[in-house]
Amino acid sequence: MTFAAIDSALLGPLFATDEMRAVFSDRARIAAMLRAEAELARAEAKAGIVARSLAPAIEKITPEDLDMAALGREIALSGIPVIPFAKAVEARLPEKLRGDFHFATTTQDIIDTALALQMAKGFDLIAADLDAILGGLIRLAARHRRTPCAGRTLGQHAAPVTFGYVAALWLAGIAEVAAALPRLRDHVLVVSLSGPVGTLSGLGDKGPEVTAAMAKALGLGSPPVGYHVLRGRMAETGTWLAMLTGALAKMAADVSRLSMTEIGEVSEAHIPGRGGSSAMPHKRNPISSIVILAAHAGTKGHVMTMLDAMAAEFQRPVGLWHGEWHALPQLFGLLSGALREARTLAEGLVVNPDRMEQNLGATRGLLAAGAVASVLAEAFGRRGAHELVEDAANRVRDTGRSFDDIIREEVRKPEKVRAKLEAALDVTPAIDAAAAVVDRATAEAETVRARLKRRKS
Image (spheres, helix red, strand yellow):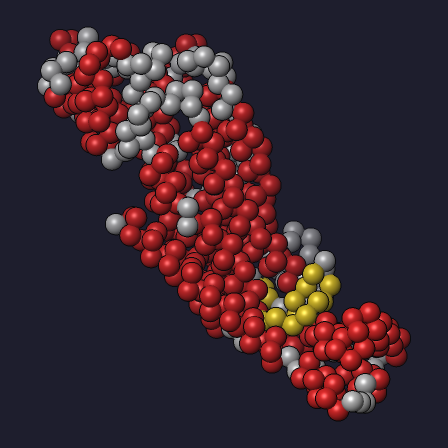
């Protein structure tokens, strides 16, 4: 186990929320396995296969009734989690019911079904955080819809935008991934009931009936074919979790750089005791951004594990499926911590419009160079206009004078061109264009929020 795993007492709370850690805790796993066994027994009883008293008897057993440490030692010996689990549950059942318990199913059915139940709860937590993050970013983008700031490409000032537009890019990227959650839930949250080799032959012609009843009781889908070795659903889940973490990381990367001393356009909200340095008392480090970026860095290896598991040989693979047990909870955990920190950014980011205005003036008007070159191309041709503006830009750097003054000296006529030049030096059209993007992005994000809420209800 890595030191920073989701269940680490020291680093787990930094990278994963308590709620998500609880969803994938040992207790939650055993509770989900007990629920899967109980609903299997109930479905089999309705089909006349096992005693009707079996399901209620299973439901009386709680995770606290089982010795987790003893189960762990026995699992290390058997190599199969459900074998010690089944023995422990059987020992607490009336003797007459023990022969019916775990009938016609297999280890992977119970583990995968339990995992689907845990994933459902994990998705609920994610959806709640997404709603808050999208809402916070919608408000942030709208508030700064027309707040001018420098657009940057390749680390340098490029053209004027607004900070609302910057926030709208974060919003759009997160909303784009979030929009897939309702469909993902419907596709991946399915029951597993296939028996030893996937045919569920132990239930004869009752298999489809029992599977459908079990799935309905658990609130899961019922796939037409067992997915013991069809791991696309799990790989898709892992990839989606990593993609959402990546969308959050885009915001974190921007915030961490915009909060640099030399830029200073935003800062994370100050929380006493957070962001300090053991050696430099003056520091306020961007901790939320750090945690998100660290989570993003940690997801990639786990996604590869999920993808590797798709190459499953025969009717159950050697090791590949078992590798998912490490990877998928970690992906849920890392995302939960990233979402927590992203919510902090979306709802509490401190914005400094005055510093944005100062930074806009750092290049002495060069952010209008692209618009000016486009206008002058009508009179001087594209190459001629480019050379003229490039020469003016060099003079700005050499002399410290403003680009506006120098380009006006260069272009005094014809009057038609001069009028268009003045329009190109005005940043209002750039602000208008950025504000329009904000409107579109926030409207789309509101649509995504509504879909997430409908799916949850």
